[in-house]
Length: 111
Image 1 (cartoon, rainbow, N blue to C red):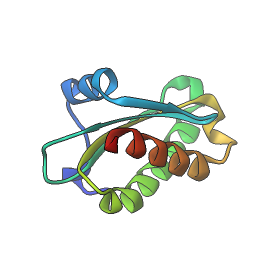
Image 2 (cartoon, rainbow, N blue to C red):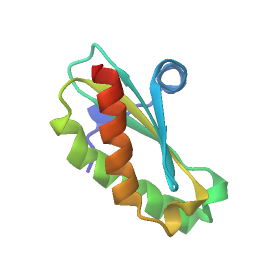
Image 3 (cartoon, helix red, strand yellow):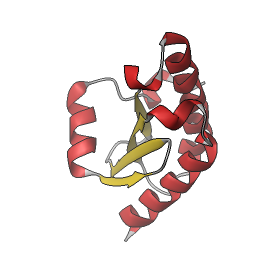
Image 4 (cartoon, rainbow, N blue to C red):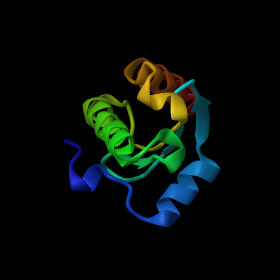
């Protein structure tokens, strides 16, 4: 489970990460990341109705929260992540896409 202090909750934080961060797209998701001066890394999720009905959207959000909770503590520096799920998230390789997008975004931020 993703702790409350590890979640992005405010619209301004989402907006700043989307506008100022790096972007990496995959078939099932688009990941935006930016460095943050905060002590802990945080994650936020955007899952629109295009993904499916409420059952599918909530299932995708739960899977993404689980992936983020496992990956955020191992990041080399504090980051804010915004993960936007695409319609293919219900039937694609969500874990593989998340990990590959996260690795590329972290490489771009480290450079």
